[in-house]
Image (cartoon, rainbow, N blue to C red; front, side):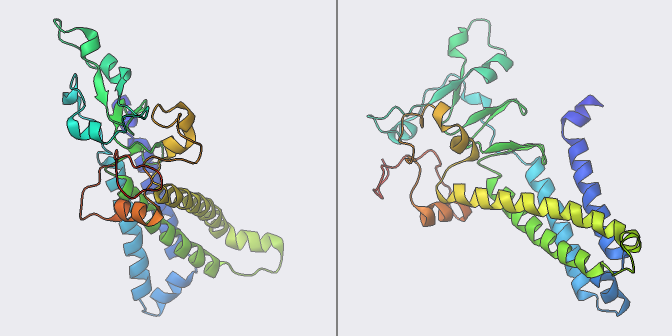
Length: 279
């Protein structure tokens, strides 16, 4: 039972339950959705239902997929020539070694403990919750009970966009169902459920909108939440100027690299400032 809750089952079940409770509330009360159904106009209700389904499917996609865990079979290996070539020789940028993963992985009896330390790629970070190192670590999201990293960051942004669209549409639907009352007491009694739904949807809308704004900004400068918040503690950033980001190619190139799925992006690539050519 404990393993089920540690795996995020409770959080995902709560998210799914809350989503469908709010959806049923909008369909069952006297809102635009119900009025469309009563008139036999099923296109908009069907589109709203499909949007909610897409949102739930994307949630589980982001929640359950590998965010970019560093494979443990790279233990003891030194950086390859391609990785070394990305790092300026005059810079303090260098690969680190993760002690947490070493502590959790038993070493062969004949091997010196210092040799079995796992190589941690640049821009990766060990997640204390997932107990793994994640490539291009952004943050650990408690709502999806998973890390956001190299492999699922794009899907996370798509999920946020779909969720934002669903929430804004839900806000419009809730407001369409609030009816006037002769007194405050009668008004609250008649609209209590919809007002509660409005409060929940409003809070989630504000949170998702804030997340979208922050992540779009960070993507435009090719930074992660972890790098932005903790650059003074990160070995490859703490000696850079406060406004310098060695991975920044400019907003358009950064956005293209992030959202373009037709090619593989080397996120550890370092660039000199004010030059289009990589180091």
